[in-house]
Image 1: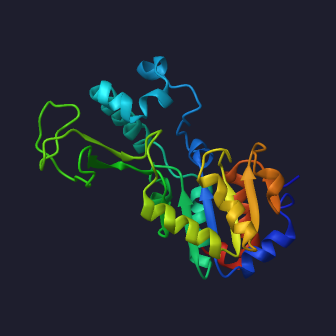
Image 2: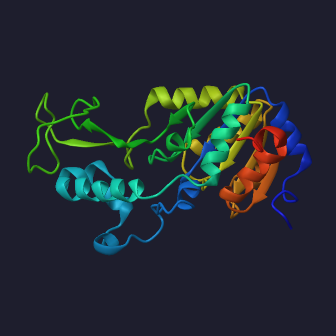
Length: 254
């Protein structure tokens, strides 16, 4: 079966007609670019560590250098991969849609690098650094051997501007995500586990407000049975096919 044959014509028509498209992406779309998920084994030096144990405020308090170095490794890893066709298809979808919002649980900037602009980052961004005490973003700091470096304002350790396990999501981003879900005509869920809250509730909120929902994922999730459409397969294959089916003439020129 071709990728085009796997896409329902009714979904193509709804994508084409939707006044407001909202997309939620999770680790699965980045995994297709080579970014390991937290559930996958680490490699090299970091194979002995559990990512879910490192990505916590408690770990940073106990071993700040270890946590800082692990995130430095992840930044290098992300810098060495590229957006995949799924990322580029979403950027194209944004250009075609009258109104579009991309909500992501990922912190790797691959959506931005693919050209997406209307992005809500639920879990922060790996490329940003913030003060661990005052939580303001810090762009530059004095060079030195300290790992982590110190905040140039208050002297506290700097940390990645990401949401760790046990921390609350940024309220501004969360409010914007819920508002988008409530107002969507079409809500796409891509590469998410359907487990992590509150993100997993967003497609259900959209559905309860009348939106058509679709899941794109290689595997079944707790959300699958409650979606209007379910497309099984990699997003890097299905998303380009979906966008090309919805806007065939324009896609041939982009």
